[in-house]
Image (cartoon, rainbow, N blue to C red; front, top):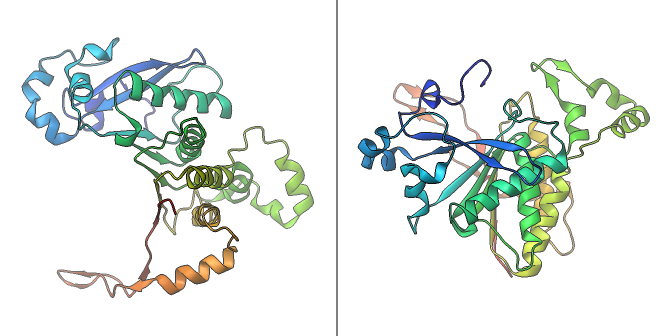
Length: 295
């Protein structure tokens, strides 16, 4: 959590001096977007003296910083754009689905135009609400002419849509919001009509895949979730995954058919072992990513 901490002093979060540069990007909505540019540890080690010699704290013009030049001037540099959840602590204005999507598009355009990193060397890593924004951005660029596809997208704890999230979410892992009302479908559906920002991730991931399939574009999606996630139920990731797979099958595939296919493809890796014996019993593991190529 970032509460009561100075984000302009990244060292308080465990980063090395000069490894992280706080800066801002002006969005098309007129807002100033706060961001960090974080160098990999090994790259930092190679240029530590030059990085430490620079001023610390917020950079009013990041393009003048040595760390930025290391990114822009390296023809093989790879960039990870991290879109995380609960990030509204430093944004002005009133966030909305449309506004956040425009903000995210601005960040991507900053990466391609200012930092000169092409989409083919850019991976979007996202978590929680960030996964919804990531999918919206990926769909936006996939629908451009010509289409733009990133090196990959990693979705950690995605949710299907806000209505379904509200029906399963528990505050502090214990206090339900709307889940008691799911026993009354008519009432539950009526209340969901008051949700202004829908964040239809399950539909966006399907449209993103269909666009890439139609354009013959290579794409890679990775979904990561925890079975014991009490904030965002693991069922959300499974629903999102189903919509993704369903978009690749011309005749479609039902949720139950997919579950059966996944079960048959699982591999028993045996017991996990540590130095002092068995850590846990046998579990079944399955591959958690989808990688599709044009047919």
